[in-house]
Image (cartoon, rainbow, N blue to C red):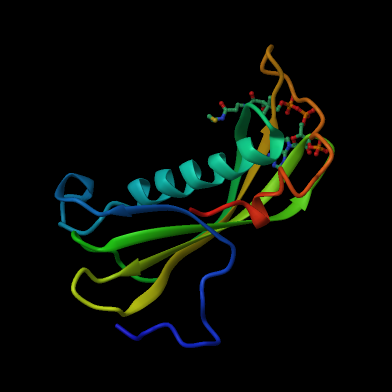
Length: 143
Ligand SMILES: CC(C)(COP(=O)(O)OP(=O)(O)OC[C@H]1O[C@@H](n2cnc3c(N)ncnc32)[C@H](O)[C@@H]1OP(=O)(O)O)[C@@H](O)C(=O)NCCC(=O)NCCS
């Protein structure tokens, strides 16, 4: 597995980091693509809720590609970056990177675009609040 080069580094804010476990595998023993997408959705949802300052729901997932397998024990890191804002919706580009457990080598394994809609208390679309430094996940605190 190649190390990430300077020209190939994660894009966006580190949002979720998790270890792939045996329960996350498919029948062949590799990590299940659906598990990876669920982690990506969780990460994008975190970013969406922060930007929306409240509830937001996934309305579309587009262009997800699987570039390399993830194996049990990998440290899986999900990065998010808002690439588009509409009236009530936003599109978040999500990248997944893996680090093999005993090495410093990292590589991008998946990416895709997740669109979320800010929702009101009746689960209907509501306008995004104005963007401020305080609610911009692209500069969210990462501690
Ligand atoms: C999200 C939901 C409330 C939107 O309802 P809707 O009647 O389609 O609302 P609208 O037509 O007003 O669209 C709202 C926004 O979503 C966008 N949108 C709707 N369908 C879309 C799609 N397939 N792809 C991208 N954007 C979409 C619209 O362009 C609009 O964006 P804008 O306000 O920024 O211009 C509704 O589709 C829903 O409840 N879906 C289920 C959500 C869910 O359960 N997700 C999984 C768990 S989080």
